[in-house]
Length: 359
Ligand SMILES: Nc1nc2c(ncn2[C@@H]2O[C@H](COP(=O)(O)OP(=O)(O)OP(=O)(O)O)[C@@H](O)[C@H]2O)c(=O)[nH]1
Ligand SMILES: [Mg+2]
Image 1 (cartoon, rainbow, N blue to C red):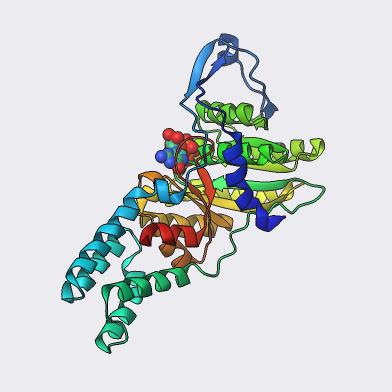
Image 2: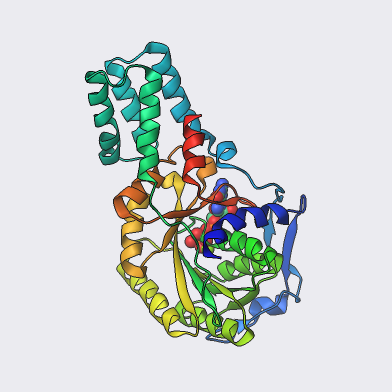
């Protein structure tokens, strides 16, 4: 069941698209001024009037890394083309190193990948550009060989809890929406807990996704304690027999120690509720490249991160951060975001990713 969880996301998301849809969420004036009971209440979207969130056109087909990671792909393609055209010379190594660095693989790993190739060319065991490129592909594949990328949904009789953490604007809330869409389409019952109490709009954004995906929804008062919202969400899910709780949290910089303490508390309190926290997913924006490593270190220290969701690979030439995160920190990349709509989330498949870079 576990091993299939990630794979099924793409399939379910692919099946869930229903054409172009403009979704406007409306809320009543009375609702705007209503004080939401603390620590948490469940809400519904039946009071309507004032538009607060507009969702854009909905895609219908699950994309592939190959189609969407064009910027990282073309970085590699142009280096390989020029090396093939010129043959192996001293510039080959500069060119390959520059490509790996531009893709944000990081200097340490770039050196570890290229040094053996350079030596192999010197001693004659690699001769042609194609052989060098194939050897690089092998070396990069080996870096992604060992991680377990399954998403754990194995708690029975109490809710599975997946928490989402990360810096501001990386795509936490959107990822929750995408996962909920996929999971509900597979028949999993889902509850979203709006642990981002920092802004009222954050809970409303999550609520839109809850309504679209058919997930239950629990929120708290603006400025309230995020840990208690997550706790109440898990308790509510346990009471109703809901299988999966997706806990949103406010974005925070990894070097803000008070906010990281708050996140530790969210994790501690979630552990005390009647569920099993079996995923803490750190969402990283692929366009930030190597800074993602610093984020991963601090969030992992605070919350025992179980996996990475790498978002916005569709707009980034820095897809090499996948290699840096896995080799430097040993945290598996589990999901990849390729756009803004519900279908734009796929299980990370290393061989598909590498094929996209090399073919
Ligand atoms: N292109 C692209 N955009 C994405 C992806 N994932 C999220 N986004 C967009 O990134 C923006 C921020 O997404 P959110 O889900 O609000 O990010 P967040 O981490 O919840 O942000 P905070 O709650 O403010 O910390 C939105 O405009 C999303 O549509 C992705 O994979 N690709
Ligand atoms: Mg958010």
